[in-house]
Amino acid sequence: MKEDFLLRIKNLSKSFGGLKVLDDISFDVLRGKITGFLGPNGAGKTTTIKILLGLINRDMGQIELNGKEIQDVKNLKFKITIGALMEFPSFFSHLTSRENLKILSLSDNYQTDEKRIDHLLNLVELKHAKDRKIKTFSFGMKQKLAIADAFLNDPELLILDEPFNGLDPNSMDILNQILKNYVREKGTVFISSHILSEVEDLCDWIILLNKRKIIYKGVLKSLISQKSLKEMYLKLTKDENI
Image 1: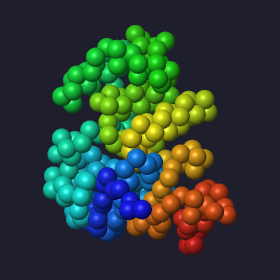
Image 2: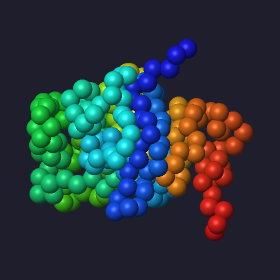
Image 3: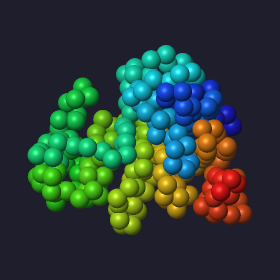
Image 4: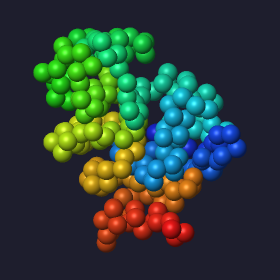
């Protein structure tokens, strides 16, 4: 059966001040699947995600959406609805969680009604704190609010950078189930995380980045047929010079 690619990234490269951060990487994001994007600190994962979200420019490479090349990635969100979570999210500390989500919905030119905002806050277990100011929130609570924000515009694609950061085991399990349900409803997820146990349970496909290059991409089950994801990850990313 022919695979259905939502996004295709070809020969992507990026440097900062002469330092190469991404070196000619290519990979695909399958529609209706959860694709894990893994690698050690500094491998280039967050840079890749920022390029996909139009936050920084690429030096070289192509990005295709539904088989058509996107010249200006900043226009991607006008061709498909995208929900995103970047590491260390920030909010208006003097406003409540409901007020923050309302403002965020307006800032991206989509207006979410109060009913959906309350639904999302309930989904991430923040219903009890909907009228609390963000300055009283723990890091984990802010992370939950960022997850709710990612779902605000009913996205076709979720791009998530370390979404499990700061979450306790119960909250991790809830997010795991939220993402599985989202994919069952025809959503697509591209997720970067160091929590390998959650990635192993969630993902269909894996892209493994190390030292600016892709060292594995394919079906997760093929990678871990005999060993755990953690064992294979450590084996493939081990620095022989240490």
